[in-house]
Length: 128
Image 1 (tube, rainbow, N blue to C red):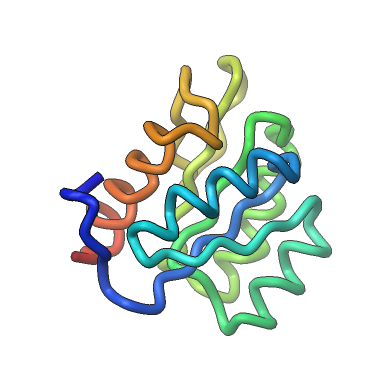
Image 2 (image 1 turned 180 degrees about the vertical axis):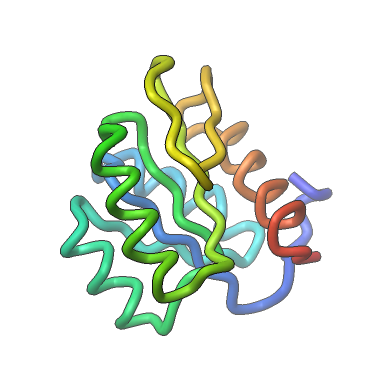
């Protein structure tokens, strides 16, 4: 993951729908890069975490999020921050959600998924 060196300080990702164990593993993997991960289970919790932190650098959905929930959450949070990039680890194909990048075949708690999130931040937010 980017040579396992920390990125810019203060990076934050909001992960929605991850199990507590997946969230813990994702936090551990991204902490190496200096990225803090907030977790939320639904739209209300996601909105509260987003506003409480003053925003995040990316929104990440776990596989259990439905297309309708992904659309609603992305729309709601991008209304506050139009530049908020959204990455969705999907378990299967289905209706696409505009403005949401999908990743298939990676478990969100894996080291590979953490690496994909880092690349996503670099590509979409220009973070180094």
